[in-house]
Structure formats: structure tokens, C-alpha cells
Image (cartoon, rainbow, N blue to C red; front, top):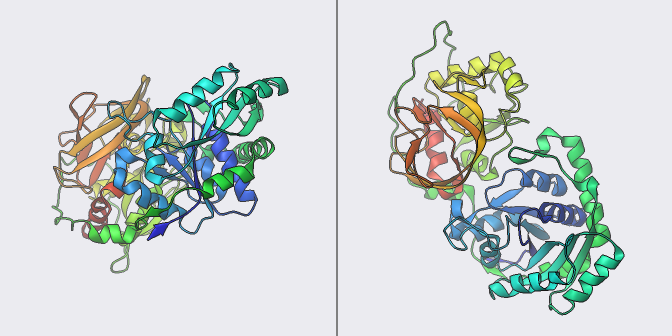
Length: 480
């Protein structure tokens, strides 16, 4: 199979240069021309893909060579870009920045090479003139395999400033494909973990994306950019397919009745009858809404391929789990921001606890871990785990190599996965009697909780790297 989707990688010398503004604006501008635009983001970031989806009307997808392995980058790209006229890939950090201590691994440069895609460098020109040529020359010549094929100048102050920048870049051999003036209206609010997700500011986000698109239309040569994208080299290989991945994954070992340490059932909590579902139907409820916005699209696709019916619910609004729920997935997000509202929804908290204490499989990552705790900064949560969560001034951030310590609804002990941590909260204690993961770097430690069917951890993982996780989880839904 040959993959020939026109594509561009939008990179920058460093974070804060304007990649998200330019990439999202380009996606929206090309989509407004009637093109089917496939949006992608290098790295583990969950927030930018939400803006990309708003710009294109398609699911934003991540390309992370650390979490998924280099061999899956092109197949996952082809899966997301199938049937599209153009793919725009937003980079991460600076062009050559990747996983700490791992060389180019997981960098934008590496992904660009794996995709054989031209790179457009977004440069914050607000505090320079002729020096921009030296900067661009350095990035373009650092790695000959990375094709830096154009520059978009961002935060240009005036017509005279633009003229000086263009004159300097005439000598670099890298064409200027856009020049964007400072524009406050495209700014998006941020807080302790970055941009505020689209789901929390839908109307304002629509306006912001519209402003990005208009700025890009005014300042960029869209025809030249599309021509550059069409010059991307062909890729060989098959697109990733969830059904094929699940079928080829190792069959899950038969589950045992109790996995890890069983938590005591809270007093005075009535037992809820198990939902009656048709034979073979395994509803997996996936938390969504403003408090739980972090998820990879491939997770739901793998669960569906494994035989589950995936139904999204909103813990801020829904007072009961979806009918027929046999398993629960609670990904990342911002429960700390919505702790009072989540706490006030007592009926759902009780329903989640009853499901978990009944032995149903529950996969909780980061925000999900907090939601299953006793409380967040004193606000009562589901009480499934005997831990307390609180905000912290310290940011925990980075890739992790992990190995499953305990048999769980997701994996057998010894299963190796790679993950990513990104939070400003702490849970105490940090691990249960049956920990979820043993983690290497920055220090060796165990973390997380395996309790009956619950697997809860701070670690964000990408199931495409281990499709057997989804298959095992759905099997537990059938047998629990």
C-alpha cells in the first residue's frame, strides 16, 4: 500500500513560538476551502487536538514515537488521514526536542522524517530582525534528513519589521510562506496544565479558531503551502486498523475472581442489581464532558473492535451510568477544577462506587484516579480508593517506562508499556498494596492501584502500542 496524502509538519525553534495558532489556523483555513483536512499532533498532548478537531471537523490524533514506537507513526498517520486531501501535523516543543536523554526520539524532527514530510518553521520574530536568518539557517542545516522547506514569521510588529525580516531570509534559501502580525484576539487562555480545553469554552474556542483562520488567510500563502504539502514523498505500508490490531494481539489470560487487594465495601451502601444486557453485549462507559477531556481516539476504536459498545457519559451532568454498563474508562482531565460540581453529583459517585465494588473492570488514568479517590482537597469523590488527593505546586511531567506489577483488568504482571505523566496533584498514599506500575525514571518506584477490577494510575498510556489491553479489558467486562 502506498500512502500519498499531501502533508505538512508545523514546527518551531521552541515552545511559545505560535505553532498552535499557525497549525490550527492553517487547518481551519484549508477546511474552509472545502478540503478534507486531517489534524495531527506530535507528542502526548491532549488539548491541542481538541482545537484541531474544531478547526477541521475531524478527530484530532496524536503521533507519539515514545508511547507507540517509531514503527506505528506512519500507520497511525495513515489511519487518521485516510480519505483526506491534506494532513497538517503540529509539532511539539522545539523542532529537535524529544524525550529527555533519548536523542531525537519522539521529537518533531523524527516524526517529520518518518512521515517524509516537509517542515514549515514558525518563528517568533518579535525581538529580532537580521538574526532570524542565522536561526533559520541553523535549524535547516542541523539535520540534512529534515526538510525545512519554509518559514512563517509570527508576531511581526510592522511593515518595516516585515521588510527587514524578509531581506535577511532572502539569503537563507528558505522561503517565507507567511507573515503574521501580533493579534491578541487569537490568544487562548491557559492555566496550570496549559491551554483551557475546547470542551470548557466551546463558544469562545470557536471564535478563537475563526480568528486564527482569518489571520492565516491574510498572512500566509495558502497556495504555496498546499503545493509544498503535495510534494511530500510517498510512504509505503498499511494504515493502522483497530480490528486487525485486536485480532493479532495475544489472547488475554483467563481472569481471576479478585485481582490485587480488595477494598472493604463502605457501610450503608446498598447493593445495586447487575444490569441485564443481551448476550455478548458489553457496554463500556467512557467519561467525557468538561472535566474529562483527555483521551486518545484509538482507545475507543480498540474497545469497539474488541466487542464493546462504547458509550460516553458526563460525570458533571449524568446522574447514572449508561444502561448496561459492564466496564468503565475514566481518562485524564481536570477534576480538580470541577471538584465541587463532581462532588455535588452524589448519585453518579455512588453508581461508580457500586460498579467498582461489584468487581466490574475500571480503567482510570490521572483524572480518573482522582475521581476514584476519597476526596480532592476535601471535596468528596467516589471513595473507591482509600486515598486523598490534593493540588500541589510541583508539576510532574515526563515520559515513563513502566512494567505492570500486579495482574489487573488491563494487563498481566510483567507487561511492559510506556506512558506519560502530566499533573499538579498528589495522591496519598501514592500506591496500594497491589501497585499498578513499577516505573523507571526519574526514580525507580511503584505507583497506582489494582483493586478487584480497578486499575488506577497517574500514567497516561496509548493502547495502540499494546492492543491486548483493550481485548483483555473487554473480556473482563464479559466475565465479571
